[in-house]
Length: 276
Image (cartoon, rainbow, N blue to C red):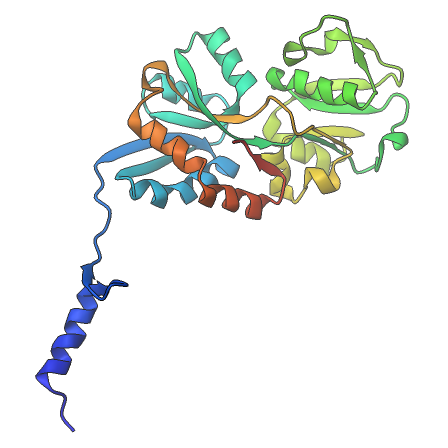
C-alpha cells in the first residue's frame, strides 16, 4: 500500500514543530546567546558546579566559559588582570586576606557553598585515641589556620589566648596544649591527601574538595569535623566595579537555584553544603 502525500507532510511538519498542551504547534527555539561570562575556578567542586550552571545560564542568554586553575594564586591574578570576569575557588577569609595583602580591588558577589574541613587519620579513630605528642599536619594556607585552630579548640584539645580573633589566629596564639601536640603547617593544600595516604601525621587537616578526590567524607571519616556555622563559605569574587554586573547577578541566581542545590546535595552527600 502506498503512503499518501498528506501523511508524508504531517510527518515532515512533526520534525520541525512540537505540539503544545493547547493543541497549537510551537516551534522549538534555542536560547539566544547575547552575553559571555568567563569564570576562573578550581577543578573540584567549583568547575563541576559551574558546568551544571552552564545550560541554566544559556537560558538567560549568557554563555558561561569556565577557565580551570590548579592552584590558589593564579585565579585572583587572572581576575585582577581581566583575564576572567569572576572567579569561584576561595572562601571569605582567603579573599579578604588577598585583598588586604595584594591590594586587589575585589568584591564578594555572593556565597555559594561550604566545603567542610575535617581532620583525618589512619591511626586515630576517635578523640580519645589521640596520644600525647601526636603530630598534627595543617596546610601552609594561613587563612585556614584560624579555621583548624577553632576546630581543635572546639574539640577541647587546645585553648587560645583570651581576646584572640579566631579568624586570624595562628599557632602562636595557642595558650594551652595539654597533650603537647606537635604542629607542622608548611604543606601545600593540594598535597595534604598525599600526606594522609603516606600516614605522615596522626591528625591531618584536609579540605572537602581535596578529601573527596580520594574518597574521604568528613561526616563519615573525619575524626574532628568543622561545625555547620563555619564562616568559610566559598564565594563568587569579582572586580569591585563588576559586582552588580547583570551577568554576575544571573550567575549567582542560577547557583542558588533549586537545580544546583539538588545537584550539590546528591553528588556530595553532605561533604559540601549549600549556602542560602
